[in-house]
Image 1 (spheres, rainbow, N blue to C red):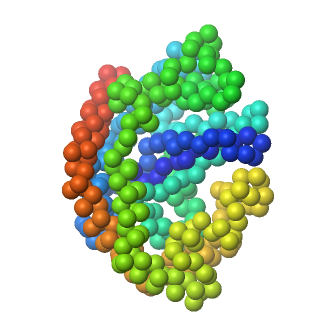
Image 2: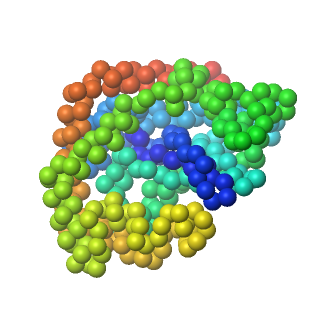
Image 3: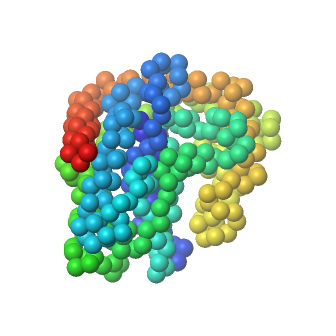
Length: 320
């Protein structure tokens, strides 16, 4: 079940030059919730790829990518550890170009923001990142390795390595074509789109707005002035994202004492006002309505995911 999307920002000299979204496999929970009373339950999840298939596809993708990298002359990667599979590669900071990754939660434990008081006190609003990076450890790549894996070129990047042309979208793109029949980024994902749409529509619902207002009153009593939990999460009054990216203030990946205090109050107010259960009920209602209107596209996505999982399983079986 998809829980977060890393947003890749490519920057030079501190200025954003381009941005593109790149999905990697999300952290998998032990089981998909089936009760509508569980705040992790979302009707759209029935059309998404199950957690077991997510793991199979991720392993197959990196198995193929490993073989591709060896073919391109990276002999040192023949025995690349892919259990657990690495995170999507980040470009090394060379020649004034570097990348920063931000996770955008869409479903799962963090869809309605931070909810665990212990996580809030320890990580502030960084808990989704911490959970993601624990499951998908980061690995440092050389620039030639990064380009060969991703095919994400910038400026005068070399489009060949060791005398071999880099495949379209790199070795990971080649692997995706073998598993999915195309590069995933070229194909619209109705589940992802509708998860986002249901959230946006839900926030405009009177019941959701009422929950926001009750939460905001509670936060004001605690000394924090935010209209919604999203306002508290972004915390533009605490520190501007541009300052963090430019190296001013604390590290982007670390929560300040004020952020932790804010997040802790956020959780307490959600608990006191019944916020999560209120907005989740709206979310479920909106998703059911969207499913009815988009069932054909969702059924097609379901079959596409199943075909990809079957191909991934066959790929791994052929190499066992």
